[in-house]
Image 1 (cartoon, rainbow, N blue to C red):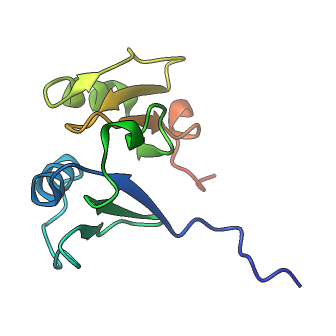
Image 2: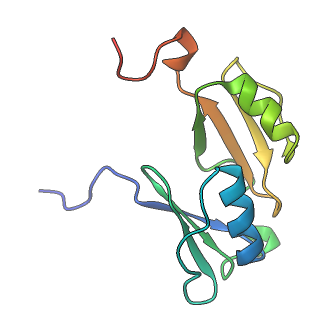
Length: 127
């Protein structure tokens, strides 16, 4: 039997300043700043599902994400886009009525996407 699970545990995001990034991502996701900065360069965001760890030790200009490695979910892409326009540089408009890209303060390209079932007015896993 294969010992590797078909699950993603954590995504590491390279950030310039761990304290600034911790506060920015916590504000973006409306989550409290909890926990400690580990080893002077790591901060684990309290996420639902796959984890995100901010890491200032791996940061350099050539290591920032040029394409989004994952997306944040939303239930309403239009509201999310309007919200984000006031916070960040959106690098695309809303594409295919479903998603858009933006840059975090360190230049990492990230994405927000509306779950396909929310596009049809119902919640995921509802009947």
